[in-house]
Amino acid sequence: MKRLSALDALFLYMETPETPMHVASLTIFKPETPGGDLFARFRAHTAARLDLLPSYRRRLESTPLGLDHPVWVVDDKLDLDYHLRHAALPKPGGMAELRALVAQLHAIPLDRTRPLWEYTFIEGLEDGAFAVYVKVHHSAMDGVAGMATSTLRTSTKTCRDGSFRRTRNPPTRSNSPPARSATSSGRAGERSRRCPRSRRL
Image 1 (cartoon, rainbow, N blue to C red):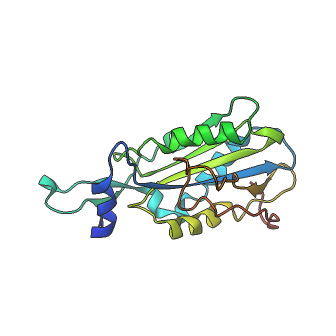
Image 2 (cartoon, one colour):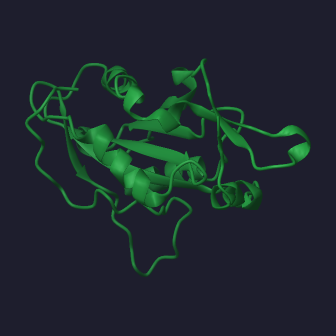
């Protein structure tokens, strides 16, 4: 058991249904060889790395009568079918459709009875691409830690024989008001990069 700090607990106390206190990122990938069950491969890839992300197995537990900040306890019944979600964009699968879906997902607060994170695998993007939207509560992970976690999640993807290449984050328009899908770590993958020469997904 580990008690939340006053700062981390503050993000819980400040949260309302209209003002969720999570951080998120959205990254777009392009398979070099499309086909196969991409979501199943993504699920297996993520599940294999959970031991490297201990915060993903923790859930909140309140103290009696609320006399102190909540504590983190290990969730022995982590339900990956709940935390790893699957969605598809309507045609044509462009940035407008992607932004609309992510805005909907980002507006929903995380369930405090479960570990405070969700991944949504989004298929149906144009040119055969897919996206991964990651949502984590700010009490569990700040933006800097989230970017480090993103590197851990994606650093072993390669680009041949059905594996994936990260392409870009969705562009933003400077003359538009910020959408609810804008996040503190959303710019982490704006630049394209070459795939590392490591294990396949």
